[in-house]
Image (cartoon, rainbow, N blue to C red; front, side):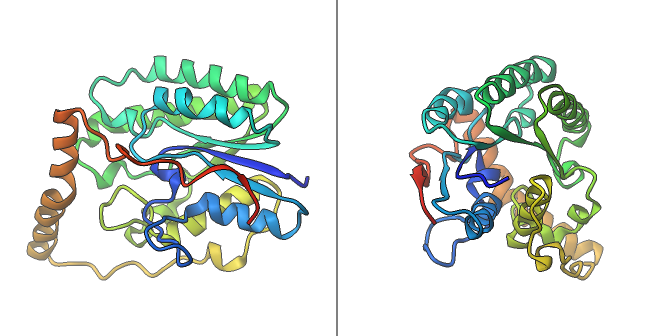
Length: 254
């Protein structure tokens, strides 16, 4: 198929953190931009919008992005949401996936192709794995069921063991590094039956293993630089996306 209007919805994963755009200082690129660039190579009058904003919870993504996206009459939509919800103690995975089912049903009812995601496994890289792990596994199983129900295109990152490589992730251990975004884009294009650039499948070398004292020192530094600010935002009701607007709020050519 040749899609002409692609709209990406979601949070920081789809906004593109932490993949700096070499052509736009201060802006992140990410897998959705990479995917759009490849689709644009073979489609005349291809246009792309990215409404994703970092830090957004599921309900905010639906409330702020779904109707504006549908108003653009896209023929391709990517929808990735819920990752921020599962990190919160109050998350109800069953209720969350019921809302996910309704959202994908609404998007598919327009006739657009819809991309949905089984998220890559970062559970073991974060604190609270015993709480977060079962939720992530439930969500990933449910995403597969919803994809089959509505004939959406499933991008399965969970079963790709290359994401176990720390080099795929940024220094905050939560967002993808540039090589991680390339690999996601390769998965997305494959789900669309489009051949990605071969180098996007290439795996970076694993970082050299640190000694126990050095590894613990890095853990302490990470906790102070990334974990503590995240906890502070939770306690104060703030979000990393406060004051941030979508980087590509309307359909435009590449």
